[in-house]
Amino acid sequence: MTVHPPIVGHCDELQDALTGFRASAHITERWGARLAAVLAGGGRLLAAGNGGSAAQAQHLTAEIVGRYRDDRPPFSAIALHADTSSTTAIANDYGVDEVFARQVRAHGRPGDVLMLLSTSGASANLLSAADAARAAGVRVWALTGPAPNPLMAGSDESLCVEAPTTATVQEIHLVAVHMVCAAFDAALEHAAARTVRGGHGGEARGGRGGEAQDGYGGERTHG
Image (tube, rainbow, N blue to C red; front, side, top):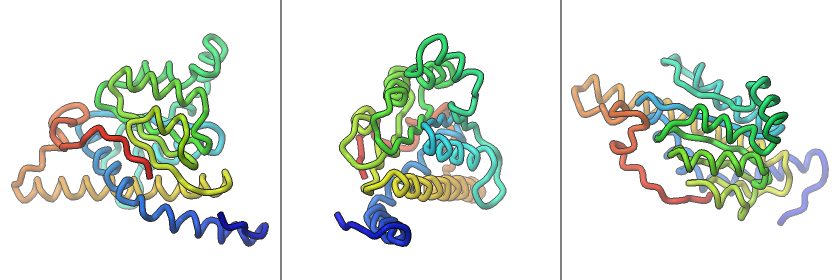
């Protein structure tokens, strides 16, 4: 791995990581399209992370509930760590490892999506959340740092960023979040256009999560 000088070398490190990440762009496109099918069908996005990754997860849910670029209807997305009363009560009563898992059991329904962000891919509370989600029929996507890592193994799909520092991993995660949002909006626009043309645009509205309509497989994919 290339060793860069401090300060300005951060830009070079980011550029190296971004070049490698570009090959995984198709994963964010697929996630955005899948998310459009799930949310337009009445499903929900749950997201969680710790520290800086919590901020990234909340950035994602804000774009879904609000908007990314152009105006569109709001969709259901919850950043689990943002409910401070629930997280602190759960941590106090059940332990820190349960702060996200218990909320997943409360809010998650079959066909929903749980997005977990972690630079290490080893946070115990995220691993517990992944287990709870899969037990509830919620699909788990992980954005992590370098592979392999435990969260990658415990998710349905993962996108792993190869970068030497936490800061750079988080910066690429933000790029990934924006790419998912762009793909999400594009999929919604495409479905709306098909409906207007009188085509079969109902695949995003067939049922909660729409898993039978979009042909999405269950394979794990690691970027």
